Image 1: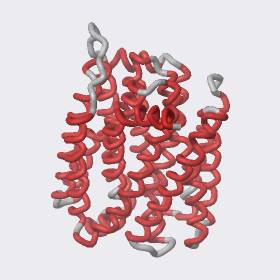
Image 2 (image 1 turned 120 degrees about the horizontal axis):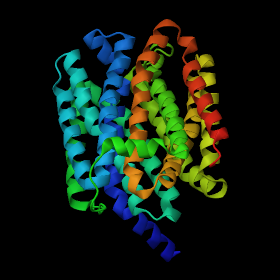
Image 3 (image 1 turned 180 degrees about the horizontal axis):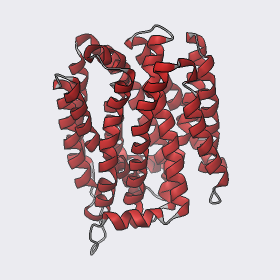
Length: 388
């Protein structure tokens, strides 16, 4: 037993800074979710403009992600992580100080450039974790991801009483702490010598692998559905349930709690027994059921029931698809592959918010159709994947 605990700690210790980076990135994105309807009221923004505000960060991340990923394959993960963290820090400070809606868009763009490092952090996990422990490492990554989903909205909902800028200053302080953590504890991963940085070639290498392409597309469809849901979440709570930012915050926190419990208690053991591919498919199926139920969730209890199913399903998808991608991508292309995956996810992030805002402005009863169809396509791709 002691040896097993020692092995687990040896696996987790080098990943603590990476988990911290992930936590801050998700925290910074999610802290705005419960504030969106009220930011919209403050600046006179429509539902579509609220969605576009979320999409701005995704546009910037899409441009940055493949560059960060491929560059990290050549110069190492740590320098790229640090540069992106400093950019994110600047973005959070700009968000706190933004006096107009236009400046808010600019600040979100800066934060998005820094936030495009998710592919690099996922590559680092694969770099330093033996394959036999990789499922466990990505499951822990998923737990941290879920923790960010919990802490971000709860913090935003609490700090909104002191002004919108205070929430973003809190994110900036955490990012500054994260930079110190990275400088002090994140070891450098040696790069292969004699290789020149070539982003175009790196992307071609990724795209020529059908097994990788399929996973990237499925992940993008999943992210599209999740982002769409989070875009309309606070608006749905406000318009259908007549709730405020505190209710939105606690409901999202509940989602994170259910997802975290599912990750710890179910995803790891199920993935070990049945494989990542089957667990991912099961999670997608549960998510489809949840989106179908949105049209009938007209009271708080029914919406909570939908959220439980959705949270359990979503928690099964992210870590398993990431683990599969890390295994299918060759080591020398892993940063490019996961960076490209991050970029494609951000393309989904661009499309989802404005579409979600458009639909909820017109017919709140139809909000579950679009993400449900997207995940049906993802499920079909998984069923056709011969590498599963």
